[in-house]
Length: 178
Ligand SMILES: CC(C)(COP(=O)(O)OP(=O)(O)OC[C@H]1O[C@@H](n2cnc3c(N)ncnc32)[C@H](O)[C@@H]1OP(=O)(O)O)[C@@H](O)C(=O)NCCC(=O)NCCS
Image (cartoon, rainbow, N blue to C red):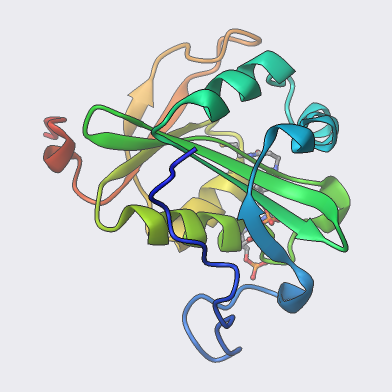
């Protein structure tokens, strides 16, 4: 986990007419560090969210890295969503984000990403997303991510390409853009 990250759970949420307000139900969600005891509910959400879910070992490996930000969205002590973001070289990668299916469209993913972005300052962030995952692409675009091409045959389960997205300048991470 990123030991230098400052806790942001006491921040006041944005008002409804301010940028950063996403949906109803915002107030009852706490965002805190994702930790190993959270992995059973995380795996349950993961399996309901992805055709090729991460294993417990994959989460444990990412959380063990010093340059990983892991966040849990919690309501009434129950984990309802999570985010894992790791730094490789000069860029942060949004590795995983999912919200329990029954808790979607409440602004929880937006809140998790916004809090992670707060922790990394102006460093560029990249991610891969299936071009068919319109809900995720709309979420990312709304938060300022832009498309920068395709990674061919990226997903092993069906051979689907990945859409590469960046927030911030990829050139600052040493990635040439044409
Ligand atoms: C993608 C995902 C993380 C979004 O989580 P969420 O908490 O529902 O997202 P938010 O409520 O913060 O949505 C913010 C905005 O994103 C867009 N969005 C989110 N879900 C959408 C959907 N199903 N259809 C269209 N737009 C959507 C909307 O613009 C939404 O704002 P609005 O609700 O005011 O219209 C969630 O659907 C999920 O867990 N999906 C399965 C896992 C996954 O695909 N992860 C991403 C892998 S790259």
